[in-house]
Length: 152
Image (cartoon, rainbow, N blue to C red; front, side, top):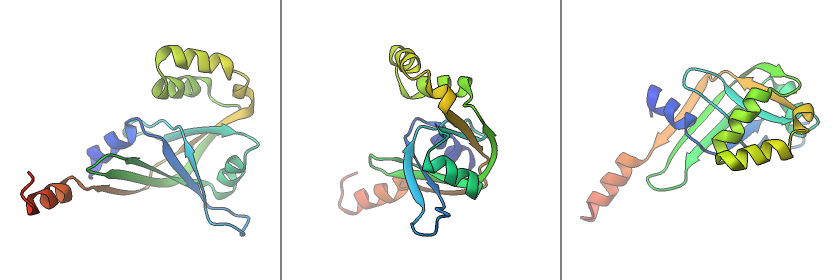
């Protein structure tokens, strides 16, 4: 995928897998599923508990990666990596609401925000500026493969 296509894919609704270097030196990088928000040309936004291992590692490393994928054929993925450019502590309430509405239906999002309102005090918001992109779109390969056995 190139430029606009990869950015639109990242902006689509996926659960991301966040990766950050484990600076404790005893483990592979930390990889965890996260809700995130992205608009083409802007920063990747994630929120997490201030006291989490993820938050400590993000602060220490100063950068992270995020990988999202389409789990249906033909498979596609986008992986993006870059520096943390800002940390909002406590969490940005506008971002929290936008993420809830991104991943949940309106009524569920409202209920979720009410039920978890205390997390606004405990969570922080990280913004990452995409620098490196890795992408794949296997649609052409799938079409070629399907053509090999006559199943177009």
